[in-house]
Image 1: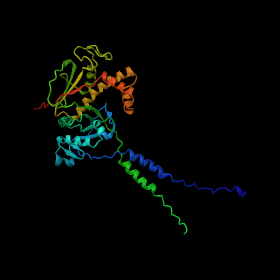
Image 2: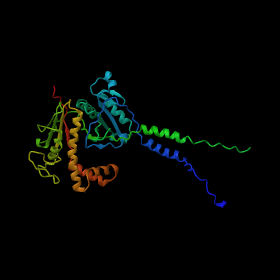
Image 3: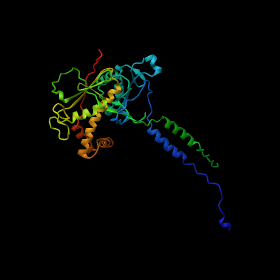
Image 4: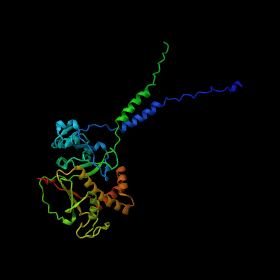
Amino acid sequence: MAKFKKKKSGGVPAISTASLPDVIFMLLFFFMISTVMRDTSLKVDQKIPEASEVQKLERKNLVSYIYVGKPKREFAAQFGTEDALQLNDSFESVEKIKDFVYAEKESRRPEERDALTFSIKGDVESKMGIVTDIKQELRKANALKINYSARQPGKKK
Amino acid sequence: MAKRDIPEINAGSMADISFLLLIFFLVATTMDVDTGLQRRLPQIQDEPQQEEQKLYKRNIFQIVINGYDQLLIDDEIAEVEQIRNKVLDFIDNNGDGTCAHCRGMKNPASSDNPTKAVVSLTNDRSTSYGLYVAVQNEVVGAYNELRDRYAKERFGKSYADLQRVGVENPDDEETAARLKEIKDAYPLNISEAEPVDYNK
């Protein structure tokens, strides 16, 4: 019966891990593509208001953000505790919005410039005074598509 | 010369490297979707032209918010929660009977029809942004409710569904036409007055 010699008994054959890199690469590419890098660090306090009728912001590359709120504590000494405006990475005065709008438009393709939305990310407790000024400046710069950033109630940020 | 064997490169650490990259991207990824209330600002006018517009008072729904976050609707003190139903009744009133899809009370003291109805919003400089967004939300909510009702009656689909289809297939002409019809039936007329400082 030598012909039917039993195969080596015992011991599970090692699972080949040769395809492991492929799997990992696949995941890697997925995350690389879906990643949107955060390009600004928040310098103002932000508690986004809640609203039930919100709409999703489509085409994130056509959205520019304007942050409004009280400066975070580490900046309070320098910029005070009143509502402030953050564009890109720095505190700016309201008059700078025009330049910001033109810079943002400049960085988009000409055919997409009109579709640019400016999203106002305002803190719940900020006052309407600064928001109104911002809106007024946006109107002067002919940036009329705006969005009041809000989140759906019950959803955590 | 004897052919030399090229030694195979050990690819065993490839998985480790890609794991490292994977973890980096996992951490750096923000998956949150941004949401908000879309609004279009009116074009700025160089000289304030006094257009002779015949706007009857009954066609204006006035919301005033003062610096202490108190609301005044048509000269009566009100709460945020009341806005939605009041706006709903106001827009859907159909005072002149020209709106076939309205179900309003036909109250002669309220709006003529949805195209003429204007919601006017006035706020103070020290009104809180949170309340402002809440009020806007309620007004938009009232409009959405009416639009949704119209969409369901007319097309058997909810307004939100139609909107989603419209966003997913921008070339879908049928949906675009439907959305336009709904928007024309209940046009969103929110007028924001120039801000005033009541504390002065």
